[in-house]
Image (cartoon, rainbow, N blue to C red; front, side):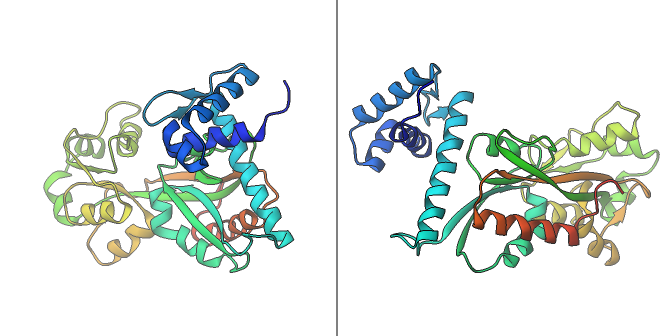
Length: 301
């Protein structure tokens, strides 16, 4: 395949970022016809459909590869300009990271505070479940991700961060009212707090207690923030799996009780990032690794 024309690749990225061909044309200061011609030429050159012509536009699997390439190219361009002291070097470097809500609420912001002030960095955080953050990395929407997957996304490196421990807990009053009898049966019937409609963490715990069968109750409260989730459980709306770092102060204060002593769930977390020689990305990665080591349980223990 011939070399990829950079103007066509950058145009593809603009269409994905702006959502429509017209908006991309405005951002690039060209006509919509020129944008369409560049994308069609790139599709002909690669022999693949690169965009789903929806609203907003979405990249296909092949298109996501080129979008990721375009973002990496832009990152290298900015880093090179910064090192050479060229125009625009005074602007802060933007680092985009996908991170799960519980990490964001407990330890991740401490990692960002640890990042050196030079080079100047602005963070763009995308909150997503740890089982889905790798998808944002694969699509080129972020440069790095805290993820539960140890399998590196193509073009990315991966390193272990540690394990986040979750405890099954409820308020004392809720436990007295709803959770008498065998734990698996009681938890399957009691109201439960979940993060969102994709959250099956509590279901998995009930299945584990029941030997692979069962699920949490259909009586569910959806609370889509980490802090709100823990507060909802402490308020007695339902039981839930709460990160130990959030649960411990509430347990000590008597606002929560553990439901199945000796049982918990550990979720392994990994850091994945683009394989780029970027000083800003390297600084963030080092700060994340050190802070995770101080706050998470080590892998394999």
